[in-house]
Image 1 (tube, rainbow, N blue to C red):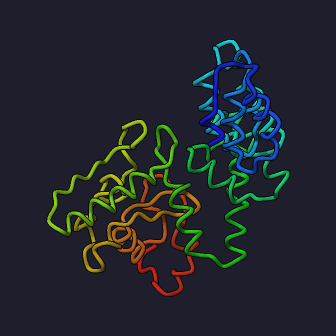
Image 2: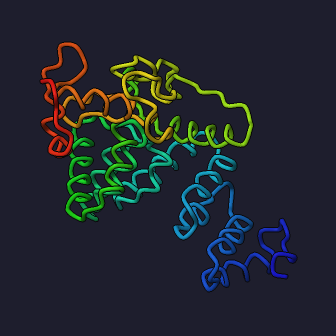
Length: 283
């Protein structure tokens, strides 16, 4: 009803009453509406400084209504304010490059929440950055301390399985691959892409069958004797990072202790506690 009395006449009684009553309103979006309708000559500070409104709504408003000369300074002000507060909503404006990593570092310094920073940075393909690797290692140690082995394994899959070319996570591909396999079981056609979803370069290959990540395990060695799903999973050494299909690696380490990659001196099997259960017949 209050909005129905709106008029373009700036000196009208409606404008005076709205300006007086606006601070008493509890809904920030209603306050913003009245601020917008009573604004003078593109002065929208009443909307843009309504901090109870989400950042993306304020940014959208600025992009829609501010002239170009004011838009740049407005976005800089919003970004700097959020960064000073270590507010992660600033990622909308900073991205997760250098400025975004500075924001995440400030967030850790204020909150001590290394988990959020590690997840954001690793999913954004920044795992190779020095400080990000420190966050990731700290988060892994935390998961180990809490004995959250399954969560640790899922995190490693997303943060360690990266493209050899662009160094970005291929977890999106892995999730898509699982969905496609489920569709295949129902009779739908299943297309198995074998390239990075980011740079379109070939994904890592199994060290033994030399087929890319995501393809079913072939009949190399003893493959195919266990669960078909597990056989096609990729597994790798946490030291040298070489690996391949779970079935192929299992068959290899039943006979050998060293890494299957030519020239790699890593004794992968001797580093794994499973070596106590599966004796190596040929070293």
